[in-house]
Image 1 (tube, helix red, strand yellow):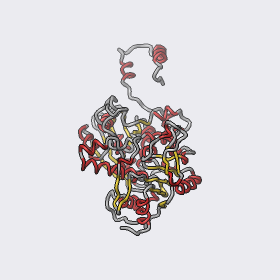
Image 2: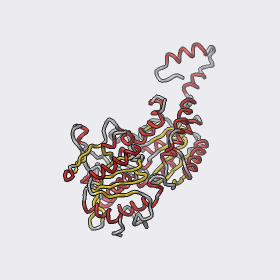
Image 3: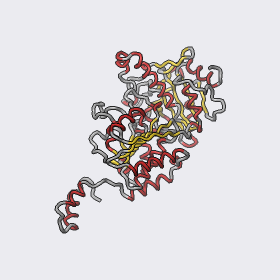
Image 4: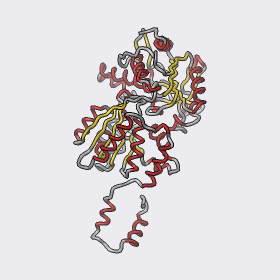
Length: 441
């Protein structure tokens, strides 16, 4: 095995073992050879996955897994295959994605896990690293903007998690490339997109089933669509997610109460009580965290002595997730002492989530009202909303309203067993408390 920088070693190897020339055909084969994962890497990844109970697949997850494997084996440079997998929170999109990555690698195919958000990549990398060097596993994971100059069909399969978060442009300033969906499809013979359109939480998010269909069609790919429905987050309940859609007024549903739904949902009168409850749950197995809407500036980033999420009337103050934890915040042992945001928890889960709802979402006379002006200036999710409202007042307002509601819906579905809430606005707190007890609507 010769790596980058081993040119001299490769030259000496060829001189020693290649005695007779073949009109330079051997050099052509080396230069144009397909990249393949090593057997040691594949065996190690399979072994590490077996030791992780959270990656065990159930029900329709197995059906989609087998379908994706079949399409990967069928695809070739002349006929691309694209599989779109729709699934809500807790349906196991990431579980299937990681299992696919490991199995495709085991089969000697060049596969990669792709996500816009860095947090899932970092967490799954850490779970699979084991005794392997981190750089070896890191090569199996990548961001969604890395395929602008990738050769066509270089990969056998690209597995795109959180596809709703894909952007049009790439790069630090968002000015590179044409379209991330197009570039990903072009770079691979088969592509799997895991998507939940209700988790688009950024003005730049373009990931939609319709858009993927369009670019796949332009590439001449066969398009297949499937759906994950089996819930294992939120205590196995579709009812809780439907209830959230109802109370956040994202859409009307028949789930107006949580009656009969085995999910631990509580509204707290004080952020300190919420914090104490989450710390108590976290003491069990390090699987409880606090998150909040991005309504507070990240002051501690430049001054570690300052708190960020400050609620003076309760003498409450906590910092946003530490830079030292980075994208591993949700699994770092001491991170229960900080507050995470949408960018450090989307695509991941804990047993219990504590959510602080800020002033960007309030309730007045039973109507849920969103206000982007209450978001922190540090938050990039709604950056540019003022121009959007000027250019397209009606559609722009609808888009921003949905982004803020989707953000809280996503935060409130990170807990598999329970969600605890504190609202900075009293009327909003009363609204949720009354709904919880069946007093409204």
